[in-house]
Length: 145
Image (tube, rainbow, N blue to C red; front, side, top):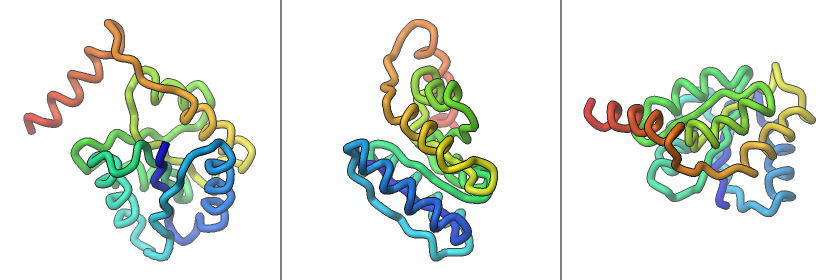
């Protein structure tokens, strides 16, 4: 998969380590940078390209992951989740069809971050009776507003 990655300046070293990890899993990484102190700009650029299918998924980093998630969520077709544990990382994909995850470099240790990213990237959303209709409701609302 092609993975779009970006962060704020505070998460630069963290992002670099995670890029190496993502590449070690066999994925192509497109780095959207970390120089812009307005993290929303990087998040929006990643969200735009993931929504446009220029990248398969996105991974964003800031201090908590919350700001990047909020910014990316404003772009139609981008569905980010701030993940804190392996179960959430898997369910972001399996139950919610999230195409972006966010992580906090100041709250999530490097080893856990790798587990979260690995869990998220190992899953594929499969439309089914239980989750499909829930995802449809979210997408349909977004498209009509």
